[in-house]
Amino acid sequence: MSGTSRDGIDAALIRSDGTGHVEPLAFLHHGYDEDFRSRLAAGCDAALALPVPAAHPLIDAVTAELTARHAMIITDLIDTAGLSAKDIHVVGFHGHTVAHRPDRRWTWQIGDGAALATALGITVVHDFRSGDVAAGGQGAPLIPIYHGAMTAGLGRPVALLNLGGVANITAIGEDEAMAAFDCGMANALIDDWVQQHFGQPYDDGGRIAAAGTVDEAVLQAMLDHPYFMAPAPKSLDRADFSNGPVAHLTPHDGAATLTAFSAMGVAKACALLAQPPRQILVAGGGRHNPVLLEMIARFCRAEVHDVDRFGWNGDATEAEGFAYMALRRLRGLPISFPGTTGVPVPMTGGIINQP
Image 1 (cartoon, one colour):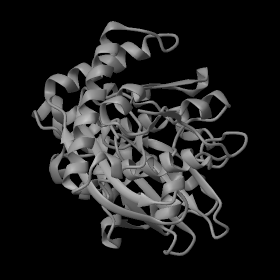
Image 2 (cartoon, helix red, strand yellow):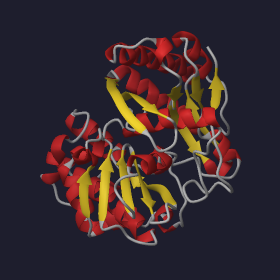
Image 3 (cartoon, rainbow, N blue to C red):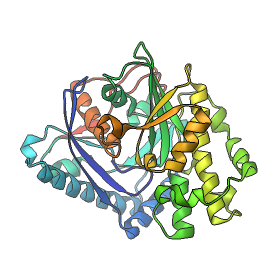
Image 4 (tube, rainbow, N blue to C red):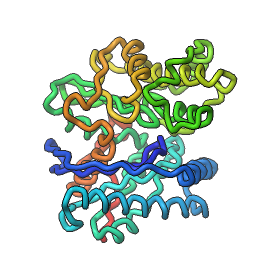
């Protein structure tokens, strides 16, 4: 999984039947160097400028390198687990989202599934989102089906929040019905701001935001974005929001305001749920930011818990989820649903590439 935070690749190994049983086995993270991160960001900008996905020299070059980096981390993960390629049934390859435009009936995750399958000698499933979008769905979030498997023993109702570059929430009712959608930004804008003003990859421990003051006028102006009033299911592109509204603030006040913006997006999402959650389980990198979590708890009036307290690895959840969905794809089981992406009927997704 290469997520919208653009910090690197997460790789997870699980054993599962693609239904209720999931056993996490191993996890690795490879960070991106600044040069590749910059080229990946430039590739995203180039993709957003195109009317439809198309060949592009920069994007093509980034795609090839991204695929090679995935082959490297997968090989390392298999070695770490003491296994070999023949022990692996399938690889779920999300790639990296360079543009997400469900309003135009397309979404674009770069990554060459056929090349990865050949490099590894393992079956690869990639391009999980395009079929959903082509059928009228949002193509995101896809992780709710895995959230359901993760929480099978916790009782219902339950809500899980993933704080990556973008935030998404999954609410599972007593009847196992799922509602899920993107809430707004999570780490993406905060990371960009901190990198620009402090030369740090992220706000470690939320210390920068904690030293600033939230500008309420700017916050409210950002929350007037029509996305927050739109009904669910709905999804976002990383580029749908920017740091422009906080550009005039001091570096610390900007970080504080962007952190509050992320938290308020979650609060507005919870207000759209039929039953606003009393407990929220949090995965993703944003769970390491106590200032963000405190704001979410306060704005949502809910208890907020790190998923690690249940013995899970909150850094691995998204990568594990795409491994799980690859198994479901091989069995022809659905990965998206009317209540999660807005697709008309439950459907599977992904292209199967044989080595």
